[in-house]
Image 1: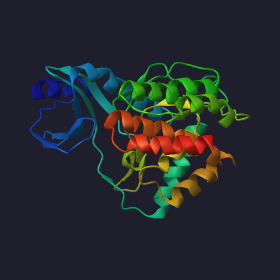
Image 2: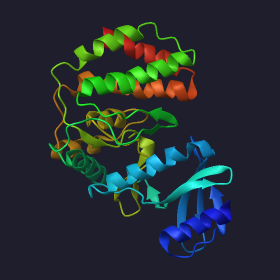
Image 3: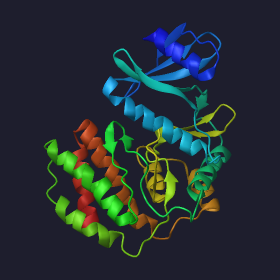
Length: 289
């Protein structure tokens, strides 16, 4: 497997690459390795063969973000199946979160520029393929209406999946019925979003350049990225200040934040179970209040 992946990297880059060193650097959804030939280094993700399309979608998401030339992402090198594993090789970047507030301000500004990319040229929400959020399928069927898209392909899908796993969400139907009211008179423009922008998926090069990675890309309401950025640890205030300097948030953003966060909490229940069911039900109660 290792020799085969080295050969695929050689083919993709046009530069001979033989894996001499490899070291595991953890990973929650995937096995992640730093691989090297003593000169060049790449980040390698591995999973079961059936998840190769997950890696293909991640690579395509990175390429679509890169094409905006607004914010840095690691470059995908190659992906596929080798023996009993699917794999994705991407550019390795030396990263750090020990930066000054100015770098966080630049992160916010760059994300805002990405959200403004092709503003007014898109008329639908979704993406050309389904991808994953963690390892959960993320449905990206195109819709002209954001409320329909978010109700059916985000909250509705996650609740159905959670119920199929034995999850108990007694007010789920009430919530689904109320989403049009929660999003009433709100008509966002489709924006290219990262889709999974928590603190673990954003960092900086050692030169302080903002980087985002591990995307769950689609065209959606830009606020989903801002909401998630405050979840699971959150970003510093300088990030939001930078964002608002370029693309000020709607004054009613806070009304929708809990709804957008619920998508990720439901997904965490579907991935990990445990206390996320109670957290999701508490959020549903707040939304129905």
